[in-house]
Image (cartoon, rainbow, N blue to C red; front, side, top):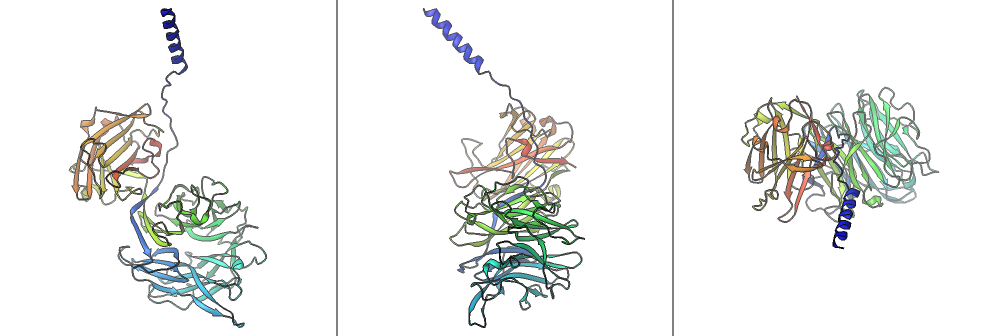
Length: 581
């Protein structure tokens, strides 16, 4: 009987093993993420308004512009006024606010009166250097005075402003008003103001985008607006125009089906809106590459062209939040050089679900940086105006050079531009750059980290950086042969891994061929590495893919890891492509 039991157990074991054979790992490739990325810098966040403890029941709708003096101007709403502040030192300090448009009281012939609030301030510098600001007149009470679009001009860089000039009046009720002016000057000098307009639709809830033109730098304006776009039965709203190549692009919010979504309407510059862009016109395009569900709100769009030619779109959205549009947050997406297929979405402000970040805008800070501005209450009970900088990570190129590996990232060896940035999840951040020669790949890394911790028990628990390399541009979805990971902690200790069957396996071979030095200066440290191409089993200079990760601490017990934006450290198709000049 004893032998029978043994045979049964052996048969049972054999059957179970046959039922669950070990499947071989098959590396899977996927479409790579290409093009520029935008990495937000949490340490750059700055509150612009209200200043110095002022209490304002409402402050928001910020818009930033750089002017030819090198100054940066910011305008926003404050309790019915439009205020302006300036920075003359690249945003380090800001002037005290001045009121450009002040609310006023209007009384009609019947003795009725109302406060007229000023909203939606927008600023442009013209080709001749003058400044023009537009705003929206919003009466607090209906049927006393019209909603309107007005402008002011400054010929002395904002020191003084002309009297307010009303250039368009809609109806006197909230249901028949006009809203959100936005300014654009064409190469010909023609100045345009776009706005959302309910004035023509007093019997319905419809709304169009209208445009008025000035041919003398905003001194006089056409009497009748031109209809730019209109979807019958719906509400085109919140226009923002840009020039792109030989086209005029206008971002709008369009509630074609249920909730608002960002759309782009466009016209050839030579055509200049000779025909209305209807709801089914080919000149009207859904902006996002991936279509959002109908019940997701994504309104209040804004457009910006960056120096490399791509177009950046922002909007406020309930995606991955509640369905309450009042609790929307800012989202930014990157389009192509034609202003289409917006994707690679990010949220500049880390806003809790019970807070908001709305009425946002974008500005080009310098050729490598954009800035997002928002109306948000995520740091207080009331809404405030905040900005955050976003680093434009270009398509990476390593230039030829042989730096001395001493931990000193000398400008003569590395230049000023460190194109890779990581630093959205916490106060620490890093920048990285690449060089190469015939034998080696060189990586220079600068880290700013105020909470540097070192662990005597485990070199993996210390602060440090991770470098991922896909040596042959395999674009895999999991680690496998040809993919490498280098862990370099704050103390200068290194571990080398290679991908194997979907996981990382420590690789002792070739570890001693990697040369690194680090320098420490208070809250900053630098890392300089030389990695032989032979240690990556690479014999040519074809493209590779790279990702840089940062490990830091929010406090002594809370650790976090952050990679390059949109990069998954386990999937090389999401890493940045690095070309060799």
